[in-house]
Image 1 (cartoon, rainbow, N blue to C red):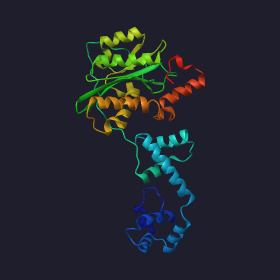
Image 2: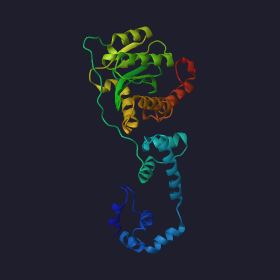
Image 3: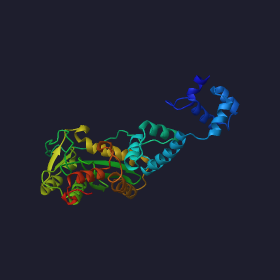
Image 4: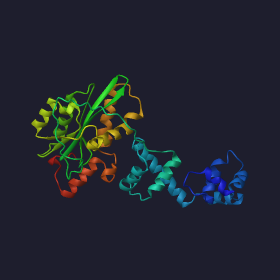
Length: 317
């Protein structure tokens, strides 16, 4: 009975004769062809006629597309799921196909993207220090680079102990524009991160730096540094991740695509991995769903070209 054979195939895959014949081809080493045909409700002569005709045009196209998908998946460090692979095929390779087709071929090859998990933050507020007002109110959509920077601090364990990472992200393009790493969660980390960002981007007046209420961001050293740089500080409410959603989103991506995928023996090993991920992959190549599946630097470059703005005006092309 052909209806009984539906459980042998992937969900959503129609049990047409060609699909059944492919299954028989795969299983004929384990069971007689005649038995498989009888159980699956197709004729033996139909199966052999299908074999003589060879692979259909659709099968050949699927095979070629599968090879492209496998290479893109490997190039993404095994992180891309069907939506980003579909975008890569369309934007970088000029291949037009359906996202559902990409998902089906990935299932057949056992390929999948990485998935997010919840993590604990390390924000510790110092009640003795003043805080900045919230200048954004969750409006993380500036109309140009270097208008709004968001910052946060995270940690990850190695066999030597914790490694702490401070980052500054441009809310316009989601590019990581400054970062610093160290063995302790001290104010120097966030000072170094914003100093790097300013050195690389050379922002004009009116820039807002937004963070949580962590003691590093309310410290005297950081407050003085922002004042010296002419940057306006901003902070969301206490304990609400949505008030720093762009920075939280970057760390969730970093956790999912790098930090949680292996154990790290030393801090130096993790430092090098984070540097290579941020500068070699995330900023330059990783397709971001919030940017129309462009990478951060591609998004900025398109903005430059559309407005004929020179790169020296504070954008790293």
